[in-house]
Structures are given as C-alpha cells and as structure tokens.
Image (cartoon, rainbow, N blue to C red; front, side, top):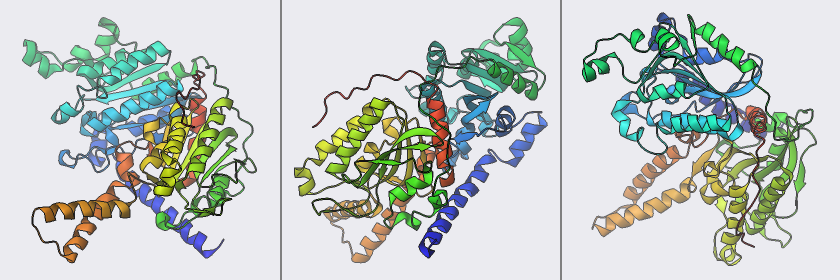
Length: 541
C-alpha cells in the first residue's frame, strides 16, 4: 500500500472511532443513575432486553441510534429518541424490534420518537417482517404534545399501522415490561399477543392520579391496570410472568413457531470474500477532497470476481453493473469520482451526473426491475451538470428519466451515502425521499442541497445585498466574518450526525460493515414476496 492509501485509511478509521465515542454516550441513555434505578426495580434496560432476546450468533443492526442527537437541549436531550430499535433475529427469525428506553424521560415520546417508531413499522411493513415491541413508556412528552399528537405522521399513526400490519398478516408481539399509558395502551392490545410482567407492567388509559382528578376514584396502579387485572379480569393481556427473563423467553417460544414465509426469490449463492476487502477504508481521502476510482471501492465490497460493468465505456461518471454481495445478486449504481473523458474527447468531472450517465443509469435500473434484482446505490454525488451546454443538451430531461426510474422502481433499493449527497443528485441516487428499504451513511457522508463553498458564497451574496439595501456599509472584513459564520452553520448541517439525528439515514455505519448491512437488508426484503408490476408512466425520451 502507498503512503496516500495509509493516510486515507487512518483518517477513515479515526472518523469512525469518533462515531463510536458518540455512540458510547448515547448507549447510556438517560445516564448511569437512571440505569441503576431501573435495575433497582428489577428491570432490565432497553439494550439489555434486546441483547437477551436476540440470537447471540446472529447480527443485530441498530437503527436510529443517533435519533435526536444534539436536539431538544432545552428539554435535557433525548438520546436515541428514547427508544432502541433495529433488525435482529429471535429464534432464528429475522424481525424488527422496538424497545422504549425508560431511562430517557420515563420512555416518553418526543417528536423524534414518533418518527423513529414509524420508521421501524415501515421497515416491518415493507419487508413483511415480524415486529416485537418491548413497552416501557409514560406516553407523550406533554411539553411537546403539539409536535407529536395530532398530525398524520404523529403518535396516532402508530396504532393505524398496528391495524394495517394486522390486516397484512404481519406478526406483532408486545411485551409490557413497565408503564403503558393513555393512547399508548392501544399498541399492545392491537398486537397479536400481549405479555405482561407482574409488579412492573401496567396498561391503562388513565393513571391513578388522572382517575382521581377525573372521577374521584382512588385506585392503585396494579388494581387499575396490572398484569393480574388484565390477564384474569379484563382479558386484555394474554400472559403474565414473574420476571422479565421469563417474559422474554416466552417471546422466543412464540417466534420459534411462526410459519416460514414464501420469499421473493432474490438469487443467492455461496458467498465469497471481496478480492480487495482491505481497500474499504483507504479509497477516500480525508475530507473526500481528491478523486478516486469507484470501481476500486466496489471491488472492496462485492464478492470476488462478481462485478460485471454495464455500458462500461458510456456515461462514465456513473458506474453500473451486476455483482454479488455475500452471495446475493445485486445491481449497483455508483458515482464515479475520477475525472473521465468520453469518446468525443470531452472531460467530465467525477461525482457529476451528465446526460449520458443519467441515460445509462435509467436503463440499468429498468433492467434490474425486469430481472427482479435488488438495487444498491453508492452515493458520492455533487449533482447534475449545469451550464448552457448541458441545458441545451436536455440535462433536465435525462435527469427526469433517471429520477422516474428510481421513483417507480419496484425491487428493493438500499442506499449507502459514502461521500457527497448534494441537491438533485441525492434524489436521482435514491435518497431518503425515494423510499430506499434501508439507507446508511459512512462517517465521510455530507448531505445538503449543494456543496458548502457554493452555498456559503450564495448565502453571503444574499445577506450582503440585503444589508446594503438597508443602507449599511459592509467592509471586506465584515464579509469575511459573515462568510465564516455562514460556513460553520452550513457545514454543521451537512454532517452525517445531523442527518442521522433527523432520521434522514437509518444509521452511521463502519465502512467495513457495508457488506453486512446490505446483505441483511436483502435478506429482510426477500421475506416480502409481493413485487408490484414495474411501470414508469410518461417517460422522457
């Protein structure tokens, strides 16, 4: 390996070590004192529950760990959005798991909590995966109730999804391990089976204090909605257990008896390690400031010898091709970051989508839909080519063709944001708005409407013009200070942490785990055997 490669490798590993450091703090939830209090009540934490429940020899891929990161500071923060969730295996069955973290504001729902839980239900519905709820929540966080209660994508949508998943035949299991209050009480009861732990688990529409205030009745929590009440009197719950471990063991028993679904038939053979696996850390330069060969990176992610390029000598700023990842057949659409020359002798900038590359990618995406091959998008895109030459050549038309193909694609799509994800390039390369089944970011990812330098200068021009219109004198030093302020704010908003906090991506991953998350994503998608007919509607030609 050359010196530049080693420098790149060190920088990427350092970037992910910073991700890990932040995650270690997030994993503490509401803090060590709150965890201690949970243990004193003979309760496990959300992470301990998931660890005990999941098969030890299978991967658990956490989703949304950065949800709420550096948000709600005035409310004391909301680590991981107050829930722990992800894809795991229970009794050999892949499933979605959602666990309230009682150490974070008693498990109350912040706005980001609702968004995260809906995202997990979306994963279950799109992939027809069983979903397990580990309930321990005080309900809606009242100071922010207007941002979590009434709208379409708010708290109530969870129960609508409960009903829709039931109609779709998706197994839902709810274990009530702590409080389950008010509207939240509908979640376990709308699940297929409800399990409760004596002494800690409780389900009621109104707690003892509210009952006293509303109707004057004095009643304790256990009599009002404890495990005995709901398994022996109301009939609402199905099972009661003395300990959490017994409760979680019974979930394992239920999961072990589920019928095997008919799969979608995505092709898989015996996997092979990549020929260049060691290259995964060293291809991108620190800050992603230098050109690199995307094919080299693809060869570090795909099974050795499996990558076959499609239209290799045409539309070179997008690399398309068929490959295998952990044995799964995939179609890859990736941005080439080298400066290339087309057959006409024209130089094309890496990371930019030109007319020919958009045309090629659209055709390849349609081919994968025709063959029922899942798509993997590797994003490092600065946008579409601009200028009179591109406009007169119909770049909007060709871009629309690619966006149409992505939007109407019916095979599973998995997106990895490796570097830049700017502007309409984010859309064309299957950003969050285009319904990827799963979307992940490397620590090197940057997501924004345009690059920082261009955005900073544009915003500066607007602000300076506004100040001058008000009769203010702007000196060169003032402009420099203003630009610096704009750039700092803008750069903060482009980081993968900012994106993951708002669930624009499901997780920030170690680049070395890219093969794993793609393979697990396809394994999940393969459990949904319903693939709609591929139609594009009016298609620009």
